[in-house]
Image (tube, rainbow, N blue to C red; front, top):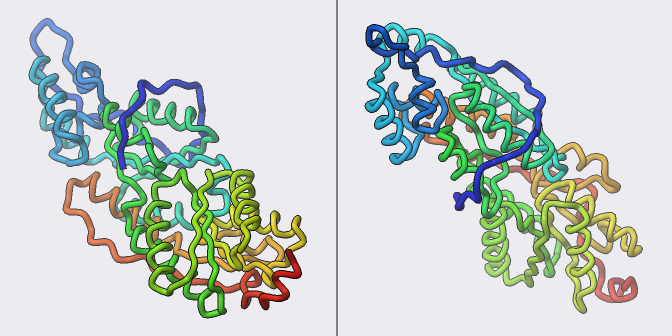
Length: 370
């Protein structure tokens, strides 16, 4: 998903790096003119307003850039009289390629299995000889500055975008920077998200729930598909469905939960898009004197460490984070190498039923509890 960029990125954010950058691209040779300074790949990049990696992508025949950016690079090289020499290209081919990923630790995805994801991602890239560069930031401004640094210092050949948001500016801005990218959500997640949603709904339906609600993360692009599957599945089962949207913060989710529980006929079960958001909803129920799961069942659509830290432990949809990381790594490696993309298999989901789900309360007991 792309949107119109709202101007240049600014900021002084600094991320913590794990791994090593690839260093400058040695494919910077050109045929020199006697008595003049040698034109380098850096000159072409500066004239085209892109990274040296982007110039390297174009002249090594790899895909990943828009046609407009490619044309701009080719025009800049022609105007400067630059072309890579065979020795420089041979050196470039021997250096390890690199992929960057920026982790934004703002709390919204804090309960995801990040370690498993990075393990699979790093292994898949290492199998192709590529290097993974990881930066950790806390704000969007810091994330944007890291991408600018990747271009300025030619640290990576391509980046992986995580947690795409509705109206996300990053794809258009990276295109303007001339930095190729892959969206992690493209690595087999949509079908897996649909499978996970159906598993959660059918688990609740089998327990006897007929009033099921979803508190959706209105900021995430993936949420759009999840909401559609939720509504479709409950319509198929002839079950009353309610969707309340919140942002990625626990306070916003808590407010949405309060609104749901204040309905004249409240739900007997609520789904949340992550474990940390489900925990916020469970806290609201406890403050109202409602017992989980006896009076309200709760499921998180993404499992994580927090699922075992709640009381009771959280029933959740478990995804194979390592497999998802490997799928993303294969996508990145394909783009770096310029080959045909892998046909990605569906990443399987599994519902882990723990202590937060049970049959709904008897109607009379439920009315007494309100």
